[in-house]
Length: 95
Image (cartoon, rainbow, N blue to C red; front, top):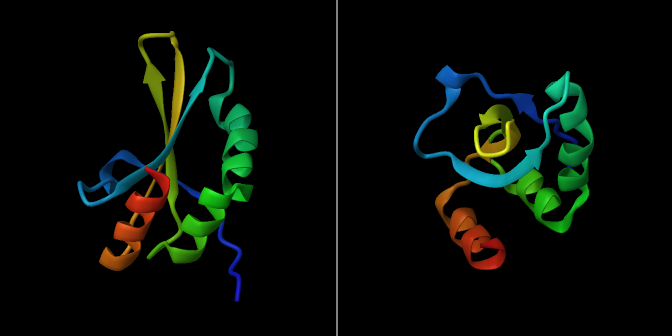
């Protein structure tokens, strides 16, 4: 059974230390980072890793866009939570 979840924008106050950083995508300096983030996020969701995470996540993963001071661009960070057995499998398989 597959579920179709979409990523939610992660507001700063929703983040907690138990969240796992699934993917970090570098992006250049663009006028509208939310608009340009859509394609790399969808590409990640369609990847093997993204499909596995979307299927096993406790709640749909969230993303946030932060400033990358090293490149004067942005970073797209995809976070989420997994239950303990799934987290172990994820870390063994994808990190």
